Image 1: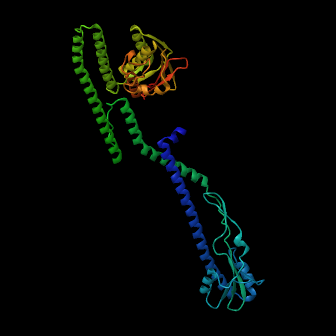
Image 2 (image 1 turned 90 degrees about the horizontal axis):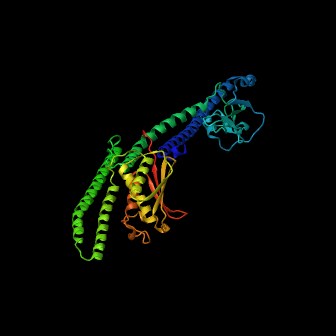
Image 3 (image 1 turned 135 degrees about the vertical axis):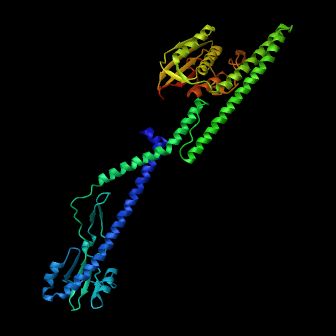
Length: 454
């Protein structure tokens, strides 16, 4: 769950879901307020019509029968009663009183009582989607002295309507649940539709790192997605052309240099001074080695070799046997028991470089392989003096050399680790260097496991 909400799909889904839910809540609140306002306005209009009818009908009843009539005609919200006490009135009538006076005519005298009825301030329980809430009636609620045309003074009470009794209350929990489920489903679909092209583009970038000749993206979807896919395909073509041209150029340079270097070596054999001849031959050999290593460095970024499933233990056994046959002291410990997806020649070159470095600078190579967490870890340790902590990262730079025992006197061109790192990164792996606590330098190579069908 944490991984899902940490992804872009999860974030888009959560943003859409929260946005829709917050918008729905605000809309519902506005709708509830508008509904309450409409109810209050309708009630006020109904109260005015009812008050006019009640006053007019009461006046037509003989005075002796008015009490009996009012007892039968009065309703909880609108009541016309006989005045039992005098209460002060407001200097100016309320808007409701003024409107009712206009409708009744000048023959009726109306005055608003200053004190509000006690029922006006009683909290009312209202059921809504957000649950039962307490509120006060905001419509007309007041007492009005009404003097009839025959001179009798009565009091009109306009009170809040009684709470409605609903036989079956609405189950808002089910409504809210269905709403959230439908919105979550739609938000998930929108999030998937939005992020799917980005995932395809990210996967294409990953495939490009593993295989520069990977088929281009299909131009489909919205116009913006098609434009991005077309730009990515164009970038892939340019990178592929650039790598091809660079490799071809270095290969041509290497090929062209081999002939004059060979002629120089033949001519050096005719030099009479033996000591000078040996020095010149040594320099010439170093030049040839640098040319070959330079070409290998260029090829280490080339991904034209096909990817295939490899058995790591078999590959390590083959490399260690070749090293042993060449007179190198190499010992392999452990067993990975897993397959890798990679380029056989490139991975072999990577492992050979690491073992050659260990033997060259530390006399022997102790190789330990172990599996865990979906990856294989190969550690190559030598018996050399190690490297200063400040130099551990710089040794991966092309042609960089540590000016101690790991110098040109030991041979090499300073490209072995650079080539190994390029190959490891092309396979989704990594290389790190540490000085082992018990002495020597340890190179740690991590390569991801291959799962069939992925």
